[in-house]
Length: 387
Image (cartoon, rainbow, N blue to C red; front, top):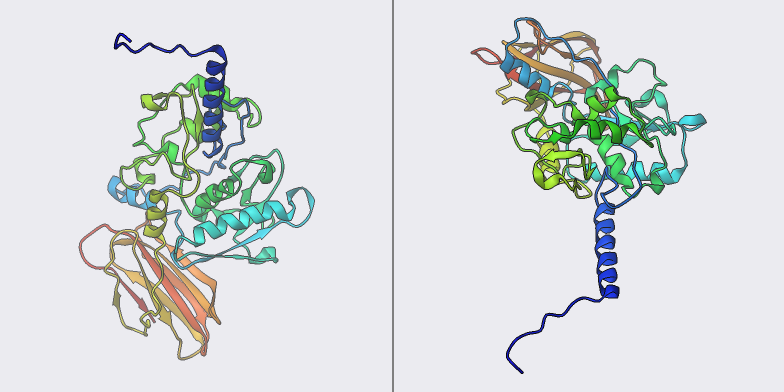
């Protein structure tokens, strides 16, 4: 022995085994991420392509700061809304129970976070805000937030799953992603704070191929287009968000660490949970009663909400209105044995008027009024009154 350590050279069979192990590990990592196939797989999975909806026009005198808060909140539901969903039962929009069960599981995942929004499956399409189809080849998509209720035609889909979810390695995560859009959340990879620099032609080429077969405009809208800062909360970018696509190698130039691919973890991230709880926190058990001819101060921060119980003493027409230089959305529900049904609503954001509901209320019934503040854009408080 001369005290020196002899360097051992790996044999060809060992090198081959190491290469196989590395490839297997890469495949496992790819399978555990959503909205990507991973850099070491030949399979390209389907991606969500949001329907393009024109941006709502605001009054010309709306300041940039005011517009920023309106854009952040305008697609969110008032907290406490029950969103009813319906599966098409026949024809090309229908699917078997195995796929429906994955979508049901997606709703349950959001519910278990502990939020003020609730979900209910219904068998009557006229009762549903969310109408879910499974038209194969039409891609997977959802309208964003309150855009859902603006879709004309009761038999039009508001959400679709365009491939067999049971054969997709992402399983219920595809549904969790689309339901996230229905809750009002955009694509996280379009966050302007992400700092992503794309190889744009590579992106167009990748998404232009099967199975997505997107035209350049669809790719621009869903991938390359950066959201305005007003559409995202804060400055944090969350590459593990359920609302973030995964991307194979060759599409991202910067940050450099993602040149070999970006693979979000499956499931909701901590940031996803924080954000959904911010807009939809658990509801309080009791609400103050909104009494006639009394003003109630809202005293809210942007995106916060106040709830009132309304118990009319007689059957007649009533007016409920906010006062103050503010942007609010106000929605009235009827409490039918604990099941809240929409009655009326108004959104004054981006205008120079106040939210107002004119409605006939009935003695012996109980109603719930929910008021969410966008912002106070001038000094003075905002109040709500009924007469």
